[in-house]
Length: 398
Image (cartoon, rainbow, N blue to C red; front, side, top):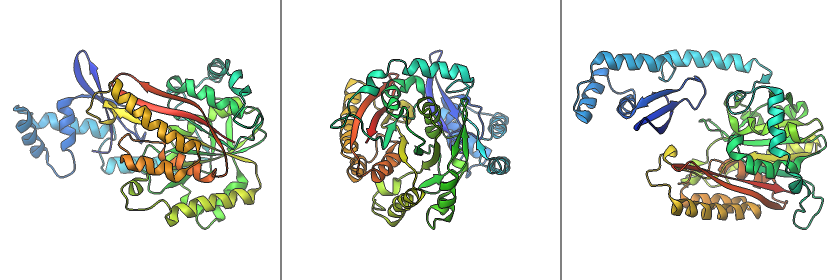
C-alpha cells in the first residue's frame, strides 16, 4: 500500500473509513469497513495473498477466500493506491507533464471553492463585506503601519472564514508588492523547502511569479537547490491564499511560493534549529530579496493544532481536551506575537508536537525572516465537529 489518509466516520450506524490519496495522484476515494482496513494494514510488501488470508482468519475467525483478496488488490491497483510499477509509470508521466507547463492550474477549484469567476467573487464579497472595522482598526502604537506580512489559516474558506475575514483586509490596497508565500506541504517532500517558479492560476486570473526573483534564485548557490515544482501541484495551503490576495489587492502583484517540509528531525533532537541548512535558507532568501530591491511582504498559510479521531487520537474530544489545547495554542501565539521563532519552535518541541502543529515550519521561517517587526493577533478559532478539531489564527506583522 501507498501512504493514504484513513478518515473514520459512521454510516448507517456502522464504522467505516474513507481512504483518500494525500498526494492527489488519484482523485477517487474509497470507503471501506474496518475489516478491510485490517487487510490494508497487512499489505506492507512482505506478505503473500495466502499470508494475508491466514492473518485475517486469526483476527476474525473467518475464512476469506483468496479470490476476494485478489479482487480487492486489483481494485486498489486500479485506483493507483498500491506502490508498484503501474503507479510509478503513472507518476512519471504526470511529473513530465507538470514540469512542462508554465502555469500551475487550480487544484481545488470546483471542490473547496467555486470554479466560476462570478460565483467566487460573490462569495468573497459576502465574506468580506462587514470588515471595514478591521481595516480601520488601529494596530498597537501605529495608526498607519507598513504591513510586513500576515499569518492566515489554510483551512477551507467555510470553516476558516471567521479568521480569514479578520486578517486579509489589512492587505487592502497594497502597491505592487512581491508576496513571499510559505505554506505547509501536506505530502512528504525530500527537502525543507520546495520553491516554485511557475505562475499560478485561479478562477479570478493568473497570478504571476517574479521573473527577477526567478533569475536570482536560479543563480543562488543555496536556493537553486531547493527549486521543486512537483509538491505544489495539488497542495492547498498556498492555493487558498491566492483568491483572497486577488480580491484584496487591487494593484498587480507577484508571488514567490515556498512549500515547507517537516522539522521532525529537529523535534526529535537529531538536529538543532541553528543548523547550517536553516541559517543558509534564511540568509539566502534575505540576500535575493534585498538584491531584487522589491517591496515585499511575507505570508504564511498555516494552521495550528490537529487533534481528535481524524488524526489518530484515541482520547475523547471533550470540553477539557479542547480547553487544554486552546491554552497551549495561546502559549504558541504569545511567541508569535513576540516574533520569537526559537521560542515558538521550542514550545512545539517540548510538547513532542503531539497536537500536530502543521503550520510549525512556515510560521518558524516567517518569524525568522520578520525578526525586526511587530505583531498583532487579530483572530483565533478552534473548529470542531465533536470528534476532531483544527485550530488556526490570524496575525498581522508590521
